[in-house]
Length: 266
Length: 354
Image (tube, rainbow over all chains, first blue to last red; front, top):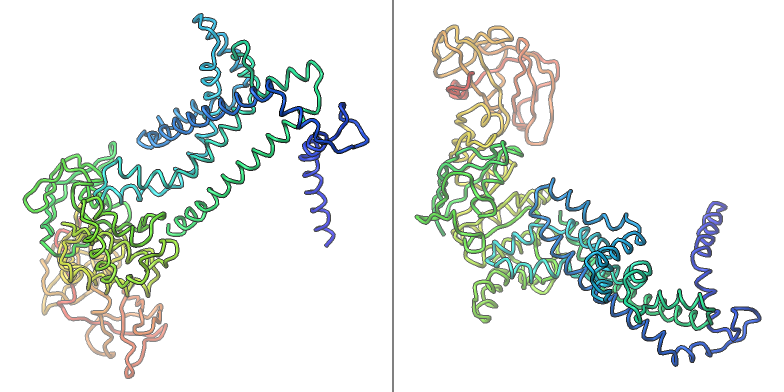
């Protein structure tokens, strides 16, 4: 009994530690005070300002588009990588694996800097193309991780069975492999999307002048003194992320059952 | 439906020869079991017939056609895996229809043939279900229907019954036999279960370490094993090995490592090393005073219809099985007994002594 109370308290403390800052941030977005100060007075003023703030909106749109492009490219690259990797010998496979996971262990700061130096070296102009390329490099490992887990748990016999029933490799991919890995593609893409959306370091180094993303915009507004508009935009982002997460969870949820059903057969 | 011939089929993984130049013929419409311990190359052999693996040497013929260059999806084979590999995102019906769709069969005919196939395996009621809603036995039936509906030239079954519990397995064996007789398709059945191979097969191929030890009818394999491995792998076996000291009146005296022993036999070459195998059920207990091998019952295992006894005769353990009939008594532990069997019960394994 006592043990139960203690463990519940413990969980509560961790939850508070994790979520209180975010809750305060969201709450202050609805506070009239310009300086996030008490007493609390409900107001939608900052949301109204947000609607009028085209700079911030443009930055947000840039971020979404950039993350979308990054997510899609990462999923496509990761899918080809994972499916192709199965035909390699174990030794080659492990080498490829380590290389592909490397960007996870290299600080983004250094990655951004090195990409910038590379562009300088070849005397290219900074452009959104290089920003996206940089984002793909750092986001790809996340798509890879999710897809790899799915493909590894997938029964190869399914594809062999499809071939034995007369299906060409392309048909097998379309009708058997793709449905099996589609949920992981969505989940992996979402993860890469979030990594890109959140990224500051790479964008900061590579972004051409006059263009900005949400993280860059927020950073610069802090420098010049910010209003709770930032809280408002953060709240919107959190809301949209939660919505995406719910959708992904829903898709993954139904496919999780299929996965479980299959592993029971083994 | 085809006759399948394997000629000198070899498969290597690196320096490891998994299948070593095997020859094998499956007559049209027969069921051939490939039997052996795990790692003997039986599954690899099956996968080469299917086309999943490319042989490093030798040829495979379906009738007179060499199929080596034909990819899996053009070979017209039916396959059932141990895991069944039903497509989880499709219904039973869609699973069975898949192969026909690949063959561009008209939809009306697909519907008809799928229904027919499901009826044959008694799964017509479950057509709309997803695989995960089926029991192991039911999945097994669907997998079989899916493999048969395309009217394959050859049916390949890879340990497909071993995931079922024993009662269901026996049921499915009978069912499988019925369905295969009905369709008349040439079938290869890979298993490590010797009992299953016995009941199902027209012909058993015993494999060990990438080679065929013996091929023959279940009767031949059990009653006339050609090698020590076959004799030991299929059923229980007592081996008697040693130099024949004398041979008269269908009795051979052998000089074994446990001392001399005299056993019934139909043939022996005096002065040569001989190897005989005696099946436990051929051995009978005779009353004391009669001629026979004297020993002491060391251990009795009761298993319902039979009792298995271990009898120690001058240091050598002999396993024998007795029917638990109404009359007659079961041997007791510690009892002194005399064993005997017909001379035909001693099967001579030629070339078995190395």
